[in-house]
Figure 1: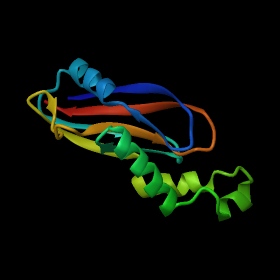
Figure 2: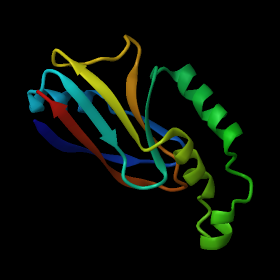
Figure 3: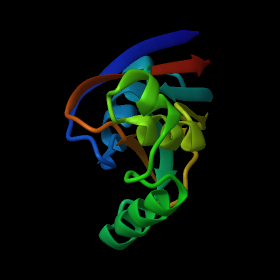
Figure 4: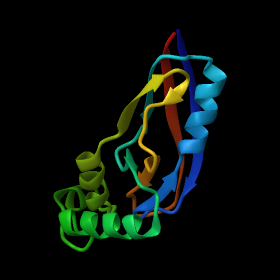
Length: 138
């Protein structure tokens, strides 16, 4: 069986991290699937989906690490070509990736106690995002 739905978000950009775990759990419950996988996917090229411990210290550490990996204040070829100033956001999103797949066991997401599913918006402006969630299994 396959069940699909989406999560709508308003984001602030510039490494805005939002916990979407409760929304994914809600969609999983509506799917009635007990064993399988759930895939969370962000269309577009300036956002990413991953798991982290959603705690203020970890969030700040992650933001700082991302800034060191793909600094927002350096020139990017993308910016020279398009002039939109968000080259850093495309690089950051590519490093973390647009999707995440989590196993489902006995109707629950197989995640650690302190692990949450997050969407990270790397763009340089506010956006309205629709995150796709597809649950597959039996």
